[in-house]
Length: 344
Image (cartoon, rainbow, N blue to C red; front, side):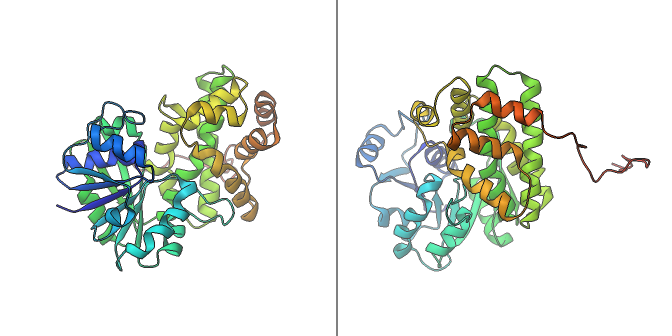
């Protein structure tokens, strides 16, 4: 049994509180919003963000950050990515050396181009920063539907500790040392999901969606590998797995925002309609800045930026993608020799 603090009472924070509580761990959930804390204390259910998911008696709620952080064996940082730095800074005075902080948000800071665990390490030098992500919509995790994620950390010991706390018969947790690859996959897939939603909003079909997912993954992989991440991570749950679910699911706020823009909404109108933080909008500028910094071609992400921030018509952006210069799918494959000799 591990005393755990969850910083952030949104849908994902509450869903993970439900997982930990079912596993027998006492959980303290923090929110900066007093009214939200009062509602959760009374209802033990987030009626707005995660309706129908009961949070048991081992889950308590507070607006006192010190109470949620101090002395906890594990901390889960579940605020939206744009609030990661400010929240981590407020948490810092209450952490002890080596206290594990698992970031479960997805994003890249626009100005610094830092990943979220890098921000945590900068703001909380005492923290053992880790990450947990994968194809995992809060609505399904909260209901106990089978889900698989990955816990990433600098040491095997930390990753396996996180794995042990969260894993049960419906929530499977793998481990990985590739924290950078996991974070890049988790952040950049949100931008591709905006493009997939735009295609849906325009009324395009499954062929278009499949192409966006596949070529979007190629863009993410090129950048991640150039930055030092493992190509294997991009082929796994936190790469292609997370990309598929975010591009295809009705629960995806990024896909929904993109779909509204495809139907003629402005970026701000789409975000207002979704009523939750659309992480892809905040990661899009960082993604294109990274592509320029590392000299990596990312045409889908480039067109998404033009739609978001230059008022480019969605249909025009899609047309430009389709009419790009002719090229091979994989330039590294050579003509005139055998392929596909893998004995497996």
